Length: 253
Image (cartoon, rainbow, N blue to C red; front, side, top):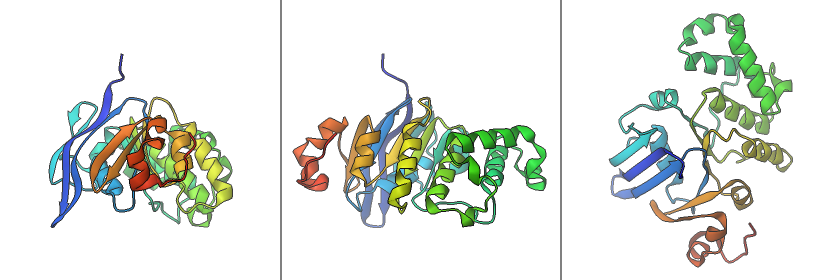
């Protein structure tokens, strides 16, 4: 029996003037999926994900989350419904600590944001959950360090923790290892690999080693359209994908 579909786009189109950035994309993400979205620069990956998450409104087509049409929903409303997102450039507040950041995220999830703004430590249950998240991602030691003072790899891990604090059904990871020094990348790879199986993941990534290590299924976007989908083995061995994206260098999966 196939897993239920938790996120879906139907004939999704996005135009910027005369440019067709998303070309009638039909996409379905099953519950618990480990899915990668790849393609050449300018293929429309981020534009597509921005529409899924509510950052951009599509020109036409539909987006469904958990069986509900959310096409006209805001990003905030989609987040409350279970769709979380990280970005290529992190969206963190440099003057807060990780524990403050997570407590405020949890408070927002529970519709208690303004109360917690007055006293971040007032809700011990929120603090406990925040500490557990930091420990889960292996960054408990930086709980009280200002975000602006953290190494970039730690900031990327904190951004993943913020997304998980929303208790998502779907998590969109936009190049989580981008700009991270090589010695910190392995920790991010391990964290991504260990994320809860109950959460369906979409990874947008240029690093093919990360993609093939992570993904159980892959979609290739080219010129805004869905070019091909398949398993990592199928994608790595598809001559059309090699021609437009992977190149002639062998990819080991």
